[in-house]
Image 1 (cartoon, rainbow, N blue to C red):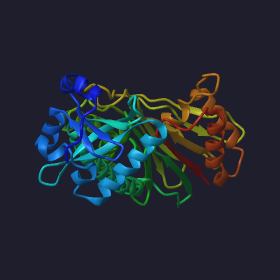
Image 2: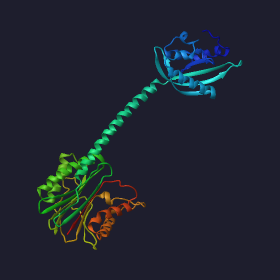
Image 3: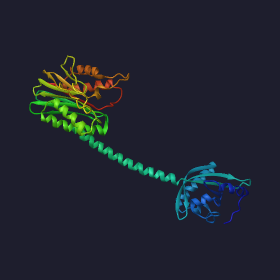
Image 4: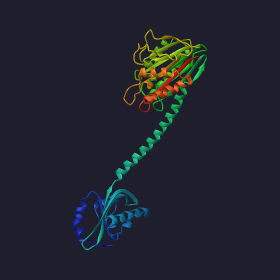
Length: 384
């Protein structure tokens, strides 16, 4: 169908041919008056296949034409429009474009639509690759989450349970700052006559620290079962981490105690760890300072005078903990510290033993401004 071009279009054709976007001009009756060369390149069609036809004849898919009609109606109401769309191409293809439309009228009152098409196929391809990458990331994240849950269950299985052993009662607590962490505790009878207690804190948080903690845990249990001197165990663990695990990537501190079954004698050894405490209800807690340095960095971290012997009495309580409990800050940025923990232990030692653990944790939480940011371990013992 041959349609007479308006004068204004003949004057603008050269300008429209210079544009980088595809251009299509249609009458109010949807007859195509003009397309520029870019439009023909985008669609792969010849000019004679397009000019003079109705716009609806370009579309192979009814749903695409229905979408176009809604867009044209919006343009009629508002005078302009812009949206993403698919332009039909030779052979039934579809080219993603941003389509902009503007309604105009000439001096004789004839109405037209000037439509421009910007090819966004490369953008859509990138978006598709991003969606695929996001899908893979989400799948990978789900796998990591499942692995972390399994790791958390494995690590939880290493958390010591509360127990009664001879004349001794033990209560424990463990909370990682993340799903898994670098703290662990240990409560293990050596034989019928001795009980071992231990807390350990591996530097850092998360998966790496948890893996290191689990490996040190396994090596520690082997050493404790041998029944050797506590100082020798510290030396072995220090050498093991430095030589076999490639230290000093991860440093660690620990406090370990070995009690006789009757609870009258305790051996204590600490390595760079916050001091353990022995408290008798009504008295100020006694601090058990570490006699060795942080492990995993220096071959001579454990000295000769590595172990402390403590005489115990009925009613005495022992408190071992990691720095996730003491290195917490209130709203004024004041740290609880060892002195603050010493006060809390002294106050809570007046309570029945089953209430002491919760009371310590409640007082620490009351001091702390916000949620825990470090792993926390706590082991309590009472001699009957």
